[in-house]
Amino acid sequence: MTADKKFRIGSWVVYPSHGVGKLDDVESFEINGETIEFFVISFPKNKLILKLPIKKAIKAGLRQVADRSGMQSVFDILSQRTRKKRLVWSKRAQEYETKINSGDLRALAEVVRELYREGKEAAQSFSERQIYQNALERLAREMSVIEDIEEPDAIKKLEIILQAA
Image (cartoon, rainbow, N blue to C red; front, side, top):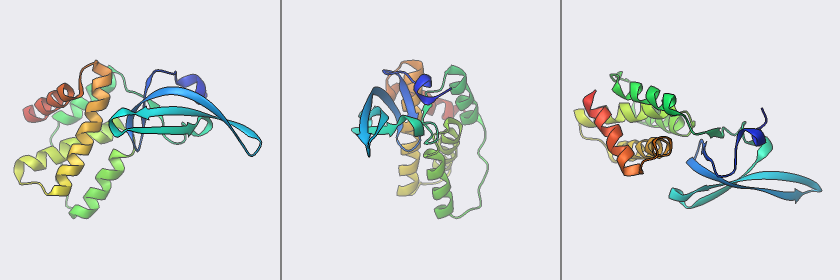
């Protein structure tokens, strides 16, 4: 299925490095004598507008927002125990950022789970809190769209699941 058939104007989509955005429009531009169509995606939280060539959308990682079964897999991940990692913080931070920017909902849930657990055991550094907050907000934005709730309510629900694990 081609990218232009897979996505609809007005729908919510996920772009890996920016998170959840709204597909507002399709625009055409002539570049070097060739007409190229672009998705126009707005990210209200970041006050950002992205124009993404339709032909490159899938390769760039653009995907539809997950469904309820996808959210259930997130809840399952958040309920699991964290595996202790022996990597130094700089390597783990790089791994976490890669997972956050992958656009993979399950990878995002793993980051939230791992950093939340560490927060309970010891004081988190500033960079740990920043990465945790970034991952939590991205996860909550997608959850708020899926469940049609406000983002703060999604954060509360996610934190309740984390506390219960």
